[in-house]
Amino acid sequence: MYREHQVGRRVRPRARRRLGLMLVLVSLLALTACGSQGAGSGSTSRSASRGPAVPSRLTADFALLRAPAEGLPASISRRIRIPLPGMDWDLAKRVPVSLPGTYWLAPGRKDVCLLATSSTTPVIGTVCATVAQTLRHGIANTSLDPATGRRTIVGVVPDGTRSVIVKSRGSSVSVPVRDALFVLRDKVAEPPNVVILH
Image (tube, rainbow, N blue to C red):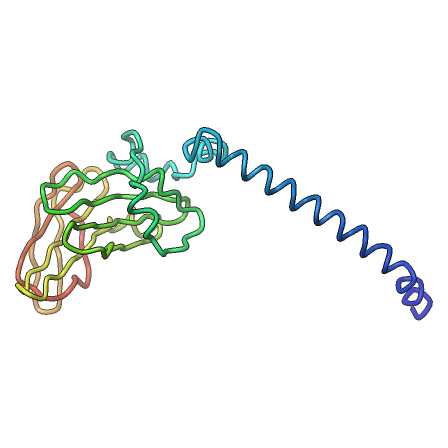
């Protein structure tokens, strides 16, 4: 044991130099690869080279995710501060609802996010759930307006859902679903506790 330790000490400075040189070379190669990828055809090719990032279970159950990806506008994706591994904002789809602002459904390998933007505020309302939670309950984004006491809930649910029951503390309301989307605007000044699919 002691002899091995001594031999290791004699070899260590040379091994360190080799290891350092290898790390520098690997770093240079990685930087070169990143630079050429960024200068190339852009984020769509990056997504394609990684293979499918959206689980097939999501595309099978959500019609919106079977449509061609639009991707988040750069003005929105630059402001997002959520570090979610496996999330690719280039795969986001705009949620077609007739409301002020825009809503985006962004799928990832493990999570799904629903983002809300408004022209009146720089805040991006973001809610994320796991793929399993989204398949079981859908995903809904709630915005509260303290000035009017109104809330707006926009939800995306699996295909075949006819209605949802939105339960909040002390209230329960049934909301029809059209094209796997629902919108609820009311005067309940809190987010829902649960959304039940029917």
